[in-house]
Image (cartoon, rainbow, N blue to C red; front, side, top):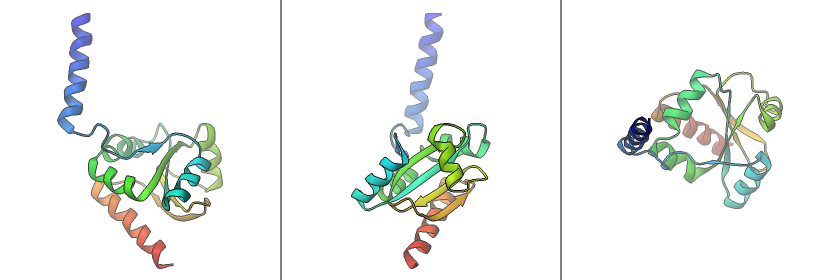
Length: 143
């Protein structure tokens, strides 16, 4: 039994080290949307909101394969205050309702007052997703 637990822990550690993604991906804030908006105002950033559902396959793909990547973390952590909400629990229910979220995953780009400036529904590979978000940011900056 002890050997099995040790081997499982060792395998997990080796997996994290092999992919080099521990702590390098998108850093999502813990807390409320109000707190994220306040932080964005202080840092002069937009808020990136991931509205997901636990049963959603594309949501799981984004959380497990895209957001942990260093390149994705480098872009999002430098440019946004990032936060995520389960649309079926707690504050996530109100956020999904407030912003009219009907499909998952939905990613919102908000200003520090909570006004929606852009939206992306669905995921993609890391490069595709960064490109979609950069395109939305460019549209926002033109307005």
